[in-house]
Length: 259
Length: 265
Image 1: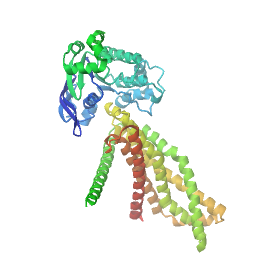
Image 2 (image 1 turned 135 degrees about the horizontal axis):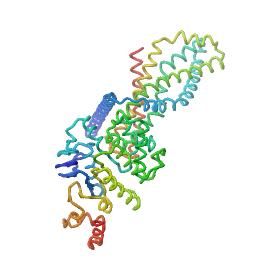
Image 3 (image 1 turned 135 degrees about the vertical axis):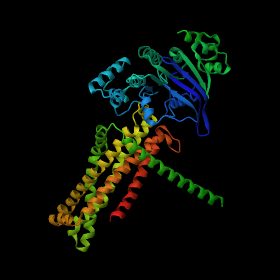
Image 4 (image 1 turned 90 degrees about the vertical axis):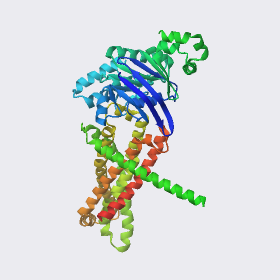
């Protein structure tokens, strides 16, 4: 397993945010964690990234227990992981190209010309050619997400973590980004973990889906398994996302499952 | 009775919060220095920050120094002329600028311009997850963001203080010598005779300490926005911690000024 989360509990003060979460992601898999706002999915991502310490439980990335290794080992592990944040999280004081180059400049001894070529290749891959010298503030929401994705994959990581790729995007941009995620997995054989609240996007890209609600894991399975689930909580959550009529007719999920 | 107990409780909480804040600031500086010692060492971010904190404050410091020098000369002239000691004008202007007004006013002006900007920038970076992104890219945020700013503060503020003092002396010369007719020799020689190396040392020590204080406090407030006790995040949080940073830095500068003066005089 590339990502292994076991019996994870997390609290903010006295409030329990995650309750006994178990998650297993295999190599080369696109795994989507889905849930509504406030369900705890972003907190789960922060724990997987090692940005927060769990109350109990363990997280293994590439067979390393991330909360039991020292900072040096954690940084060494993070070089093999790419993270694309919801709003791109590009450094506002650097141009788009400088942002993409940053991990290469910090972690490799490549010359400036090679670094520039590699950064531009990744920008082209994300359909962002021509934005090299623009500042992040000049980019649209969709472009920021793609630039953030370019930076996340510039070191050719083994794992890619993507927070809310579709949030705030129109359907066209959202679909483009979904295609890009699948293309990345196919081209670079990455293991990809995506956090989203968009049902359509989740079904479009996922090999497996985990649904979280109020900090508890409701179900993990393939798209078909989620589709066939008769679990009351899962059905309630899906109804909240697509509407009761659509769900009862099953046409919506049929369409998504077999896309 | 209950009102008294509530007042004591409030006072206790304030003391507890103050102690906690001091501890957080101490740990922040310790982390910055510890992580800053790790390679790679790059000069470019330091130069970029010296440009931001130092060069871009140059005009403001020049103008402020000139006017402060002029007003100090005006006030001293008005006092000295009553005792028939206008020849002491150069000494009075030089000493007051070098020992106190130069370092303190420069620090307060830099706090308002660069300190607030450092705090707001880091606060926005925190709310926008840019600091998390650096951490996730295995780039130490303390080394990448804090150390260049600390070094730039310690280098820039003494240089800006020197500019302030020079411009102040020039402003005093304009008022004293050119406007009120104090002799050039009395103004310059009086200053040269009275200002001792230890006064210059005091000025330098103050400027270095103030430079450190400005960046340390401002950067810590913005960088640690997510740990804010009042829990405000986003634009409101950034605005509040920026105001707090400016107030806290200004008070700390004045307190440190007293301590250094008391130690070195």
